[in-house]
Image 1 (spheres, rainbow, N blue to C red):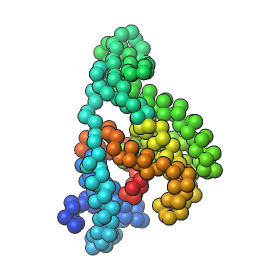
Image 2: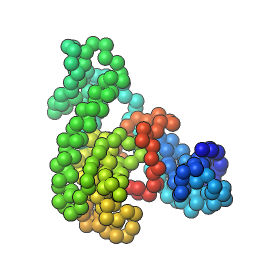
Image 3: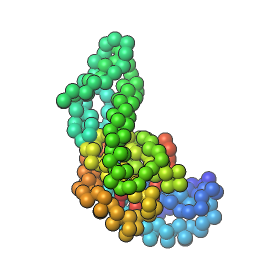
Length: 254
């Protein structure tokens, strides 16, 4: 693998050449909108430049949206912080007592009980696992409703904490991945993403047929996209990447 940095259309681009790639991929990296192009090792530099220039309107659109969207400040998982669940903010209350770890939700608070001395990372992990269980619980019902509405069935659903995608699917394996962060958005956002990914099992790309199906199956999709585009995202450090760093099509969810 060989990396280089060049400027294309006034925009710094990191080029990553890989021997095992067959196509070119563009990634817009949050939170700063840095652009990375992954390319087969043998592709000429001028061909890469033409590819990026052709995609520049989409790149600019995605970067502008990414830079404009609010992100929460870094969380320390201490009392007084605000944490979202299904689109509603809750005040976190951390109680240090006993030997067991648990989380209880009230109408206005998320109450986290942990042993004295529990560090920040352990508190974060506890909240993440609680979020995961909550999303899994609601996802089961949403999947039944969405598959009935669309007439499309996926063989498997998995949850993953992703930074750049709300959902993704493996068409060959009929497996759909759902972003853990959707547990913080209104439930209609989760419904839209599930329908979006199910439709990809019928139509791989964002063709006219794909958009027609989305319009038919999820008539409120434009309003839902506005919610996803305006609600605050989690804090993210520059250079932080997803653990499962797959290539991302910049056109997803545009």
